[in-house]
Image: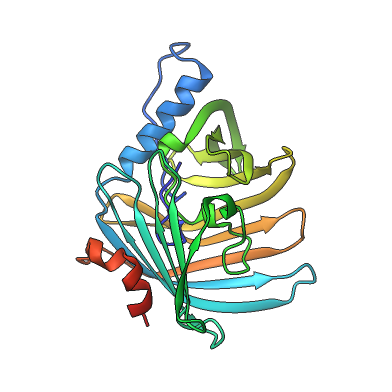
Length: 265
């Protein structure tokens, strides 16, 4: 329901909007889909973006380890966006880079560059539910979330953290997804995402994502400066923080190919 910029991401689950609906004019499925379509429209036109990111990994005991990286994203007309993330610290992951070509209807294409082996590894679509660099974000979480990849259902309204929110369920259409469904809470005032619950293939609550500290860019695009992903089954969590967002920097398609993975330093 939102675009991830880089891991962006992880940026992209960040802006969700909806037009007024006539009472009783739509089914719950139609309303959920309409919200997703309008959300996608509201985030179109950012062209490209860059940001600096910090990833904090916590185990069940609360012990932390920190990684820093750079994220780049390119808007692709008529298809999913492209994103690239490069790790700068610590030394054991420095130079590791991931590349995602998101698609509207077919499975995303993803690659990981491993500097120690000096080779690019393709991530199988069957392994998309695996953890990204040891974090609680899966590979399927880090690409842009395209509307056509899900079916939708509007579940109702709820007040969350003092804010009125819509509740929307989406079900992945890809049989290789690690999720049975996702349920998101979308703030009515600014139409930004407040929380997402992820359910595993057995329909048990697996993870919760909480984006926060939103900032608006170019008077249109909302991005969270902080994202907390908590795994309820393992007790682990991952925090992503973002800084130095820049938009429309002149990135090109050539900056998002497999050779670019090796060039990034």
